[in-house]
Length: 242
Image (tube, rainbow, N blue to C red; front, side, top):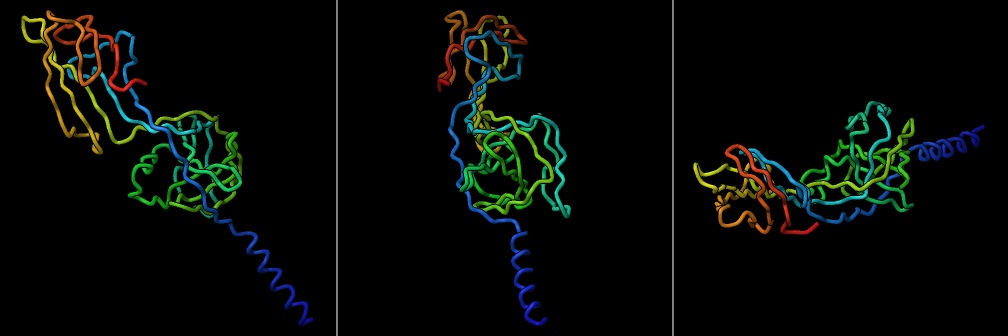
């Protein structure tokens, strides 16, 4: 009887170890970088006084997913992870790949960590998925390894490309006309890191009687109509071509 007990104990320990979630290292995904530009070049657009005429922002383009439906995330033991829901409006990026080829998926709201790992985000939820969008697990996000837990239901995601702005943006803003003259004023604002306050601002003046095609920070605009309260224009070319 004593020998039977000694056999049961190691078997029980093996069973417990098999129940714990595996900790796996993953390779971080490398996004491609591009420029986000608004409005599209070649189409008439309108900006009122104080509104942006053109916006250019550096963006990281990831392979990613959107949800096919709305899902409530039920995590055992009420682990303090977020988000708790996934909706069709949510966008997720492939943040890394596992040794078996599956992927680590993060909500795009946290994608700026690609630029600087200032926060470890231990409570952040990462999804573990097949490349076809079938989610089968979750993990707290960590810089180099994840502990995979099983989901109690399958979440379906639709693969797509996702653009995430990096902390740089340039805006050209319409500031109106000089009274009684066909002269317009534009402001160029550069933002880095803090999107609430520009790091630099430059005022530019253009005489449309000389030319209705103007160059602003490398972008070329054709002015269709300049009113006191609004500007109608076409972007002919951006500084960085898409």
